[in-house]
Amino acid sequence: MTVLLIDDEIINRMILRKYLNKNKVYHIIEASDGEEGFSLFKENENHLDLIITDYQMPNMNGAELTKKIKLEEESEIPIFLQTAYDYEYTHENLKLEDEFLRKPININIFTILLERYME
Image (cartoon, rainbow, N blue to C red; front, side):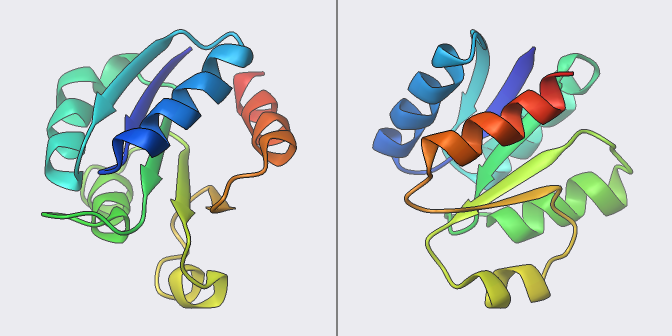
């Protein structure tokens, strides 16, 4: 499984990388903002199995990134959107993500969701 992990906070990427590794996901491509994430998506689109993105990031936020990937590129790669913001606000304004993760991320919920997409 190949995961594109996009978050501007290095500590968040480290935590998610650890969670992914615990679930035997070792091929992780990382980006620090939405623009870099979109560029890496375009370069690796045929090899990606999952995208995990933060909502609030510089240059292009997670909502804008998700819209570009899902609507403009018409990609069916699952996207997990993670945020510390209010669920109703972000979800009502997007509704394109496959899964919504509230920070701090619960490792048990993350593992269940990840296993669902690894099948």
